[in-house]
Length: 267
Length: 267
Image (cartoon, rainbow over all chains, first blue to last red):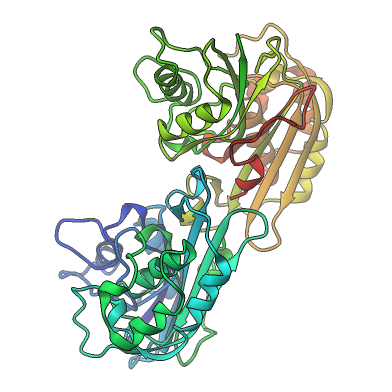
């Protein structure tokens, strides 16, 4: 029973997130529907994703896997999945993997990118891709604050109240704040082994509060120590966030590439 | 009676073009509504645009003017127009100009940019900003074809059948085709003194037919000679097109800049 790994890019604006839901349009739901058609299956084909992105969150490097017992070629899946889904989702890579592979459990790390447009007026072209923050931001203070996140910490102060993960210790490899030279955009790049629910968005919301001067950089260290969600900042809105990459032991991938290759989706 | 010049950026996706219409949402209509509110006017305030962009066409550098006889400051217009319009339109510059200024008649030239995504699969992040052309394109052939457009020519073969302009001779200063090193995008940059209806879109549609090998580059020269619209290519779809700049005798502008400055809208 072959196992197939997908890399998927999507503009999350019109989706109620990744996870399949009975009523709402989701990325997993659309892929399941398409795959069930391609395989002419009598029951919905489970598509296991690496990350349950929230409604409005985008992805360039979401990963998923599924099993099948058909003689379909990888190219049939690439072509079929793209033909049977809308233009705001694209399967950019398809390959066969070992049957022990699991998109979620085999993942060794992820990179998220959060984009902020900080200016007095909106940017019409980034309104679904960046958080519009009207205030001037103290980027140096944000960088000092971001350093507290790096390393292994208990992140229970930086998760949603609904998060049910039994463990809250996570390791961040880097939290970088990149300012554009050309325009008032900031990108927060977060690379970690695993994340709690809303963790990146609460980290970014807290960094923006630091940038506005509402809280001191060292507050981050205190919240990591004390674990009190109420002392962290707001949850940044979903539309600034993009899941860039998911890492696996065999990354970078070397399999067949019938799709775009993630490197083409830089815009 | 002061005359005010605006530079306006918009994502045209959700607009039925620039020109005001009784039923549909248009950029001119939204600005007129906002300005009428700001000036507390009893009749709609006319906002004269430089270019009547089609439904779905974007702008970074649309220009418009209006007259008023109030004591409102330029900053009131910048703030008010941006507060009273949606996030997909932004007034990026406001300044007072000589009362002989007319956004349309005073214009000396325009730059348009047309973006093409040429790949087998869609790019979810460019679906409203670029024309998705599935074929491989022969960029060298397109460049040879584009050279025919440069200079003064009769463009009656490259306008819509509904175009009512009494003259059809226009001068193009440049038609450049810029290929990205990083991703399969092409940009067609067209700079001219004035344009006929759908002219840029028909030029681009014809260049893409050349790129596909459907017609020879020299066909452009023949259509310019013969003026037969049926021998030119298709009209490229509107959503790849952006009005980048409108030139005036006093360009580059040196007035007050309460807005963004167009240089911030590079995305």
